Image 1 (cartoon, rainbow, N blue to C red):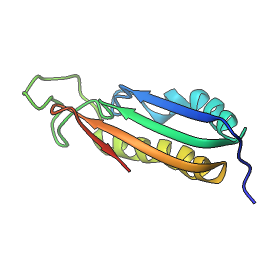
Image 2: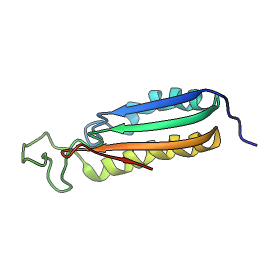
Image 3: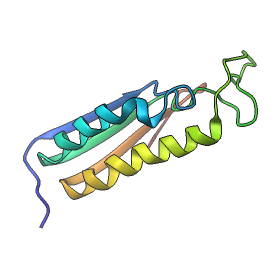
Length: 114
């Protein structure tokens, strides 16, 4: 039986810029977030609000419009992003009655909910 409550929780994750930011940089925040999730909620909404990755390209570090950025390791960026979501999504499912995730993808600003 999962622990859940009557309250709702919204987890905004804006501008993470993985490739520039590492999972290690977010380790304390993820630990605190895990403790909050384990309080139990009726619904948890995870919002990934743009700029999940520092670069819009895999092999070069630049934006879609071609703006050159400081070098970032995009292979590691993908691993770090997966690790973040692996830490919070299964826990959110366990400690709530309903979980949804919304992602805003740029440059179009399209919103996807799952």
